[in-house]
Length: 308
Image (cartoon, rainbow, N blue to C red; front, top):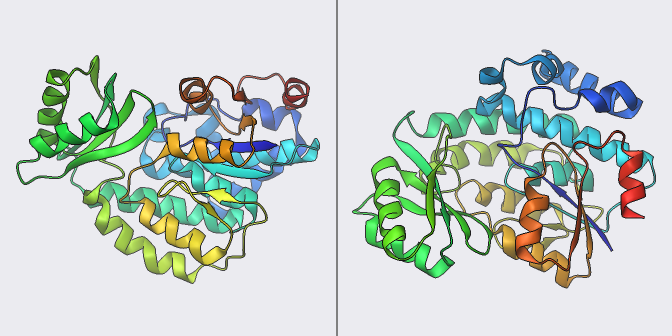
């Protein structure tokens, strides 16, 4: 069984998608559609930058979605269709476009506003995120609990064994990193992010997004979408939307997502979109699973050859 997995924010880079547009007409049409929907040339920003504008949350999120959906459509045009899908954080929106839960146009609008709302939820400089390497999930939770001091700090991305990201108030994140080192973490790496994603500080963003989600025209997914919030497959539109709303303030349970996909029979995975972060995580989660990243391939025809 074949599963498509979609990357999240942080995978963006200047130049992404240019090769797709140059070679595959269905990918070019997707970029043109995005530009029409947003009323600006997101394509040019992807191709030419500048990098500081592309990495702004409100630009990075629709840009990654655009590249991911273009890649997905290119793969489908070449006869590759998944039996299940999932996405890391923002990537879950790409997964729902692929599954038919929501239209590409609606997803572009909602992720642009998601980026704006998340950025506005916490003043710049007041929040932070850090990667904790070499420490188990229980110990990371303990480090957060011991360090909160009445402030928010919590696991935000449980990506793979020994790779967990925490988020919250800046000083609380710093304190938790110090405790994590005392508990045996190999490294604590502060992340360059514009906001503390996937923690309680994002509640204002979730509150603003909820009515907009409820107003979307959605349909039941064609294939199961395994959600970040609980690592459970969503088969109907209502459950899918509820999971996306809760995702804003909840940790991304990526290791559990992958293990659920595997337990449901997926043995081969294609990372659909820019970068290869998820392919790298796959090796840490379960080396028996096969993963192929589409980014960097000369054409999408090579993905089919690699998958066999």
